[in-house]
Length: 114
Image 1 (spheres, one colour):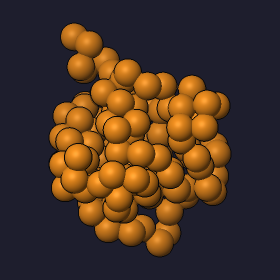
Image 2: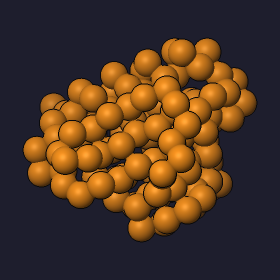
Image 3: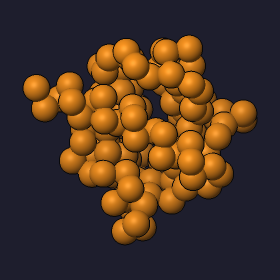
Image 4: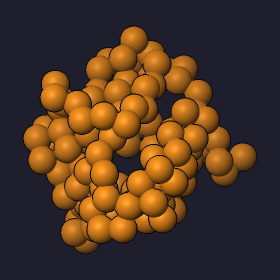
């Protein structure tokens, strides 16, 4: 997959969720490694989720992951905690904020499994 395909698919999956009940602020930069290498960020702010193809300097944490595994996480077929535990996902920065990202993934999973 190309960077554009990975970014567009990730954005589509993440923005398809309902943001009801999501509060606080989380800023996660995603560094895609290997095929389709590139950087984008996901931010939860004021109950809204943003996904943009930029480096985010005021981030809480960085996810370092292959495009294939990040899409699996967004689709709900790869649990982010399991990905971290097995070395498929590396996290730099706040582990607490990285765990909060699970809230966004859970919303996507609920929507895609309906």
